[in-house]
Length: 146
Image (cartoon, rainbow, N blue to C red; front, side, top):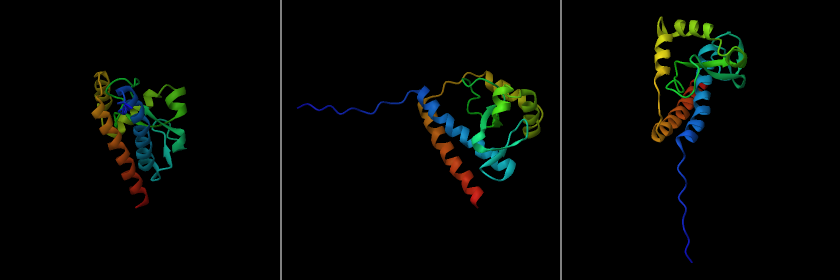
């Protein structure tokens, strides 16, 4: 009897990216909730300033396009409500104002340049990001309870 042991299939970079995105999104939303309200469950939308439960917030990008270097940009991604992110297509003018308020004059242009850089993520990079953001979420949640 010849039994073949199957090796687990290696995940594609596309699958890993899809796996990392919700973790990154959660990190952004928890980070911004804590920064804006001091509570991990409630936060303010970066563009309209309204208070929402974390489940109603999204990780919205200043520069649209999830295929370039800006996909996992921490300074280019913030908690945003559905209305601003989807219905208002990012509410870009107000988002740009808030980026300048947060990071200084010209930072919006730095993010634009970053987004123009094509980035092909490797499997090890994505696996590292998955671990990093899982750990970062744990650390943020510890801060809330401290």
